[in-house]
Length: 466
Image (cartoon, rainbow, N blue to C red; front, side, top):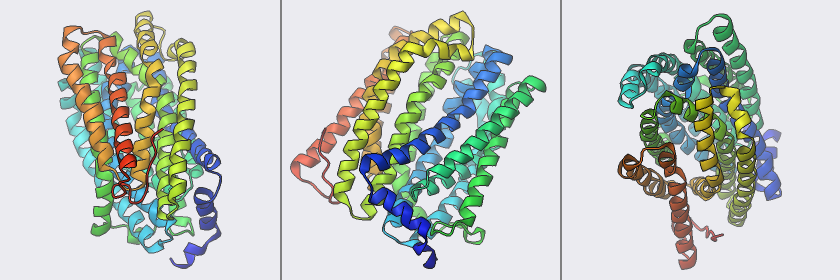
C-alpha cells in the first residue's frame, strides 16, 4: 500500500486540488459532479415522463411526490452519514496517509452494505404505513406502494454506488462517477420504454428499470475501485467494519445524516399538506420537483465541490487556500443560481409540458414555479458554508443551524399558519422563509467567530463574512 501512494495517478489528483488556480480547479471538479447529478436526477425524471405520458397523472403523482420524500428520508440519512467518510478520506488523502485511507474506504463500503439491508427491510414493510399516514390520495396510493416496494429491493446497489462515487470524489476523481451514471441512465431509459411502453408494466416497470440500472453503476464503480493502483484501492477480503474508523465517520457524518432526516421530515409534512389539495396539485408538485431539480443539482454540485476542496486543502494545511476557495465558490454559485432562476422563470411552461398536458396540472405547476424560482438565491449561503464547514470536520454547527432555521421553523409555519389559509402558495412559502432565516444564522455564526478571532471552532481557519 505504501508503494501505491507514489503512483502518478495520486500525484496528479493531489496537484489538481491543492496546487492549481482555485476557480479553475473548482470548475474542473464541479462540472463532472454537475453532469453526474444531472444523470442521477434523470433516473426519476425519465420515470415521471414515461408514466405521465403513457400511464396517467395518478402514476405521475405516485413516482415522485409522496414516494420521493419517503425515499429521501431513509436513503438521505445514509448519504449524510457517508459524507463523513468522504471528508475523512479526502483529509487523509491530502495528508498522504495511505493506511488510514484504506481503513476508511473498506469500513465505509461495509457500512453501506449493512445500512442497505436495514433500509430495504424498513422501506419494503413500512411503505404502506407511511403513505397512508401522509394522506396520499386513494387513486395514487396503490401505485405508490408498488413503486416503493420494488425500489427498496435495490437499496444496497444504490448505497454502494453512492459510497463508491464518494470515495472517488474524495481523491479528486469526479469524472468516472459521471461516466458510470451516463451508462446507468441510458440503461434506465431503454428499460423504462421496454417495460412501460412495450410490456405495459406501469409503475412496476419504472421501478424495476431503476434498480437494474443502479446495479449497472454499482458494478462499474466496484470494478474501478478494485483495480486502481492508488491508496484507495478496494480489496474484498478487507471489507469489514473497523470500529474506530466507523466512529470517526459517524462523528462527522451523523450531523449531515440527521440534517437530511430533518429536511425530509419537514418535506413529509409539506407533502401531506399538498396531498390534501387533491391529485392535480400532487401531480403538479411532482412535476415541479423534477424542474427545480435543475437548480438543486447545480447548488449541490458546488456544495460537494467545496467540501472536497476544503477537506484536501485542510489536510494539506493550506488554510489560506481554504478561505479563498470558499469565497470563490460562493460567488460562482450565486451567479449560476441567478442565471438558472431566470431561465426557469421564462421557459418553465415548456418543461412542464414534457411531463403532462393536463390543463389543471399545468396551471397549478406554473403558479408554484413563478412563486418559488425567484427566491432560489436565498439558499446559496446555506449550501456553500455548510459544505465548507463539513470539509474541515465541523458538521454539528451546520446541523443545529439548519435544524432551527429550516426544519423547526418550516414545521411551525405548516402547523400554525397554513391551516388558516390552505393554498399551495401558503404551503410553499415555507421554503424561502426558512432559507432566508438559515442564511442569516450562518452569516452571524461565521461573523462572530471571525470578529472575536476565535480559532478553536475552525481549527485555525478564520472565515470572513461576505
